[in-house]
Image (cartoon, rainbow, N blue to C red; front, side):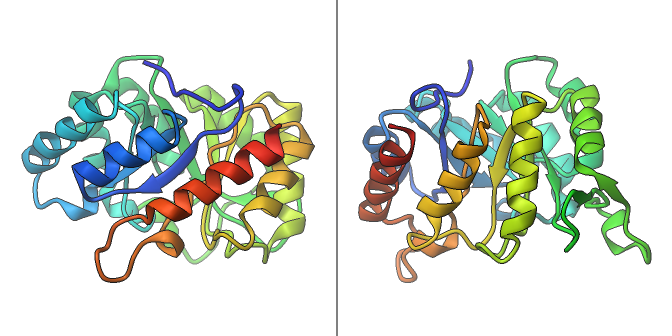
Amino acid sequence: MKINFYKDKVCLNVLTKSLINAKEINEIMEGHVVLGLLTANYNSLNEAIEDILKYKEVTNNNISIGLGQGNPANWKKVARVSKVVQPKHINQVFFAVGYTRACIENDTSFINALVSPTGKVGYLKINTGELSSYSKNDAIVPVETVIDMVKEMGGNSLKFFPMKGLSCKDELEYVAKACAKNDFALEPTGGIDLNNFEEILTIINNAGVKKIIPHVYSSIVDKETKLTKIEDVKKLYEMIKKVVG
């Protein structure tokens, strides 16, 4: 099963921790969403698999299995849960994309590769793994080369994280243009909220990126219920319609 993109271009990625919340978000977004379920929230593989399969059933598999705050220590957990669940969307650190594609044994699940801004336009940090993220020297690679590497590993997109909103706008613009030129998807992540969402989406859309999966997480989560706010999802969907047309 493949992701359902609005106008074949945008699919929203938001968190959920409730079956009712997940079902409601899915309905509001008319299926143009993948709901983030974080492996960090489960104590074991069996617990994660058992629970996530329930979400798969009520959302037509519009789910996204995640690490949890980009924590690379959960990379293998993500792969193993995904092997059983077969979700539409998978979040993964750069080095584990190939492992994950082989593990799930399908070509339809959408796998991203976590890469980070460097402060230097045209380059990405790819040492986002459990050990490499703590390396003394970062692996800084040209964006175009990174895209080729992710393609070779069986990945579908770059997860550009942490963006810290629009703090790396120039880098985002370059990455978006590179993804468009190389027919690759882009997933902006980190610090995205109702105030900057439209501008970020517009930058990527105007660059010509064919598939966009913006991640909007904690900024729209209710502090008391810990659930993604339905009214905010509605606002985001309206922005998507406005930008994409």
